[in-house]
Length: 428
Image (cartoon, rainbow, N blue to C red; front, top):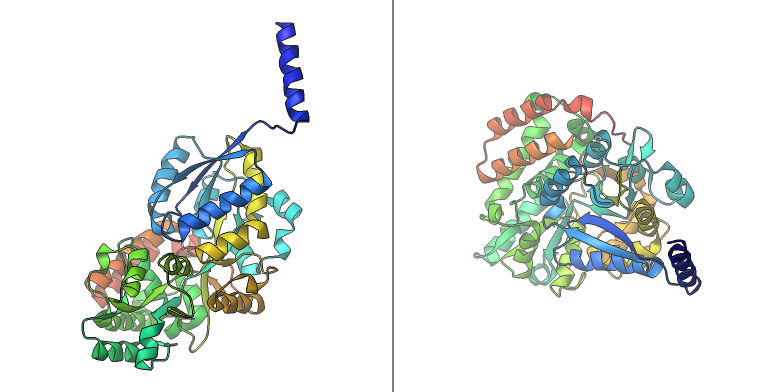
């Protein structure tokens, strides 16, 4: 037996000397499966393989925009004490729910080692810091409130991309007059969050950034708030120009309506850039984009995709090595260029993006980090509230009833103790 162990030891030493390392595994959950997203996931893992070729990635991708289905599968694993090493989560309240449940390890030492505080905007750092500790490493920033449009159609009709709601309705009227069979505004609300995205733009225009933050921190009496009511009225008006079967479509299918020319515009996040490109559309040529609204103030609603290390991770060393790559330009450049987000690191040259849309957005973030506010995906309010809130806004889109919706939403703020649970979020 002794000779056997000596032989094994000598064999392992020889293997190490020859540069042959034992293979390591990384168990990872993510939801990047749609057009542009799957390619970005591949880019991530290629960056990891270039740095750590001995790590074998074991994926468990769960389809669904923003991780709606992914969370259900992941929660079952976590509750059964069978965590993966790492999983995709959004910064904000979703992250906080994992931290509160003690599913994630704090990463103070890793952030210090990487000096990550100094290379990302403060609002982004705030979105992933809970009780003074960073728990994940963000690899991007997605901007929520972007209005994409069919550039050829806009050029044909001589239309200027709208920057406020009045202009949006006027453009929609002109499109409908020129193309009666077209629904000017595309929407897919199957997963509910898409409807809340659209409503957020109305809220921002009417109330401004301070009101927006106060609302989702539970500091506004919705039942007596003329701003919330006015935003619902605007949303109801937009429905006259919206694809009517939106409840059957996912976010990527709503973008597909623009590509197929069934619709002319869609309000969606930066990830739509990756989708459009996967369909052969080129930014600045086939489609254009403006953040919406830009008047009276240009605010960017954002959330990051992030990864952390599970408490009880099966392969913690591999997970830590993975996060080092996530934080690097070597991963962020190919991944974010492909998937559609902005770089988390603001020390990366915006010209790394091949399209003018994100070059301008990245430069705006670099010079105006205070214009970033956590969005519906990241969520200032607790996720339990947010899920129910999405249901309420999606129900309004299907059957608009302003008074009933106001009453429902007001009750949600109370039931889910939003003022208490959202106190963690700091802005500006």
